[in-house]
Each structure stands twice: as C-alpha cells, then as structure tokens.
Length: 409
Image (cartoon, rainbow, N blue to C red; front, top):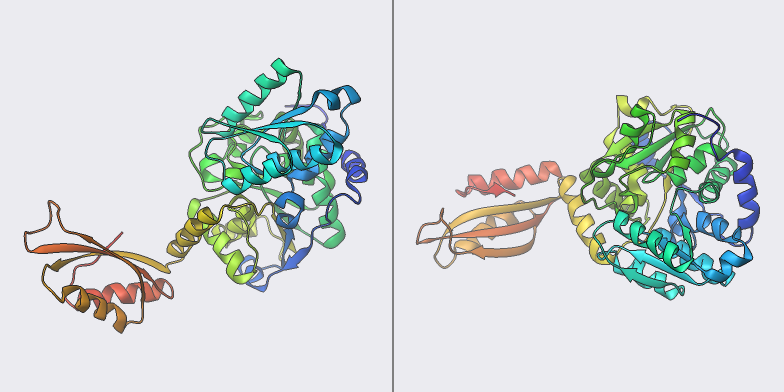
C-alpha cells in the first residue's frame, strides 16, 4: 500500500479534544518483576481501568461524536467480541444515540450484560467476530444505521491514539511500547501519536496473527485463525486504515502462544495485582515469551518499556481456567494418572506418598474400566498444585520411587 497514512498526529490531538473530561486518564504503574525480565524499566499503561474496562471507548466516542445529526437520528450498529461493544454502547448512551450491537454467540457473559446495561440492544449469533461484522453491516444497509467499525476507520484509530499521547506525557523517555493487536486500531493510533524514535511493537496471539503475513506482502491479508483465549484480538484480517499507518512506520510484530498469554494473566495478578483479560495481557506475554535476544532487538536497555494493558473484561469462569492454564504452563499445576491395585487402602498409600513431598492435591477421579486396566486395577487421575517446575519433578520422582508409574497429563 502506498500514499500518506490516513491518521496523523494532528488527528490524534484533535480526538483528544473530544474526549477531554469524559474519559479517564488511566494510570501508569511500574513493575520490578517485569523489569527484571525485560532488562529495562517496565511500566504498564492501565487501560483496563478505563471506562467500560478497555481502551475501545476512546475510538467509539470520537467516531460517534462526529456523526451528523441525521446519522445520530437513524442510530448506529456495531459488532464486537465485547470491548468495542461496550465502548459503542456507553458512547451512544452518552450522546443519546440508539445502538444495536452484534456479538458472537459465545461472547463472554459479563461483556454481553455490560453492553446491555449501557442501553444497547445485543444480538447474539455465529462463532466468530467476522460473523458478527457481516450481520452488523447487513443491518446497516437494511435499516439505515451507521456501521461503527471496531478498528478500520480514521476516527476510531485517532481516538485510540490518545493512549499514545498520554504515554508520552506520563513516561517521556519511553523507548518501546508493546501493544496488544487484533485489527490494529490501537497500535496504529499509538504509532501515529508518538515520535519516530519510540519503537511501537504490535503483539498478536499466534492463533490469530495476520499482521506479520500482511506486512510481508505489503497489503492486508486474511489468515486462518483458530480459537484463542485472547478473543479481544482474534481478528483474521488487519484493517486497511491501521495497516497503512503501521506499514508506513515499519512496525515490528511479535506473536505469543496460549501458554504465554495465560502465564502473563497469572503473573499480572500475582506480581502486579492487576486483573487483565488475556488479550489485554499480550504485551506482558511478549516480555515473558521473547526474553533474551528477541526482546533485545526491540528494547533499549536505557529507556523504559511500556506494556499497554488494553482490557480487563474477563468472565470469572474464563479467568479461573486461564489461571489454571497459567499455573500449568509455569510448572505449578500437575495432572497425574496412576494405576493402582483395586483394594482398600491403595489410594491412601498413594496420597501419603504425595503428601510426603508437600504437594497439595486439588481433585481426585477414579477410572475403573479401560483397555489397559486389569480386572483388579483402577486408574486414578490426580490434580496437584506444586511450588514450581522443580517441585513438580520431585513429586513425580517420589511417586515413582514409591512404586507407582505416574503419567503426566
């Protein structure tokens, strides 16, 4: 793609005037633990503490504020996995505009309920955000509503870019900004807002990483995506507007795995006391995943790194699963299956062996039939919380020494 990017710093400055006194200037917090990982001072831009729980309300409010009177009268329609939905709903209520929001059928319940509480009509259906987008665009055509895109519009990108202006004021010597990225509205807005000597890095989930391919080809390319816990950045194709900004700047892209994301969410809760959804933790996940040479390529040791915590709207049930996944990825959660003689006392003996190494048994399940079990045998699935990878190895070795054949699952 060629030509001048559609969003410049002046556009972001103008967007800030619209948002003044309406939204929070979210805090920046430091972290010694993450600084040790990065080899540079790490700061966290806490957009999960923004109104509606994410940065999305910034772009939504700018976009809706610039609608004509006729457009406001006819109402708006949007599509989102949750954060953009809430941003549009909140902004629409603030401006007195009727709003309809399409969301995937399995959208997180707290996000759905919050969107409804802000006054929008929610329509659920389909498995992906792309399905919701298609339905929203169709309704815009049929009903005359204005479609509010979650990331592919100059007003939206400019609104998200106000995060970058605040970072520059709060951390003037920032060297690198790590930004969770799906369609690219937030990272493009920040890239447009900050000086060229600041490295802006887009962080994507491995299971939904379209930007690396798109930048290599020089145009937005749709890629196949698979389910990721980072539903807020699970986008198959970059937006044209944000892609133009990022391509012109030569933005670097890093990807993170599901294990990286879950460990980041867990680490943020434990070490920084911040409850963040998986998509919002992508920047911290990049610190964890790319420590060493890969991280050194984008981090200046003499200048701070800012990780944008982009959202905190997470279902408690999902959060529990993510914490469990994160503990497993960090070697602190062990799932064993052992075969026992089917006689009274066998389970007590096994649990005694585990207790001797001070591991905490969480759940126990019996499997009494199976092709690999003898008539006098039973299998026991045991979930154990340990103190880390070394302790997990000690548990397995001690159980084996006690005469059992544990299988890690």
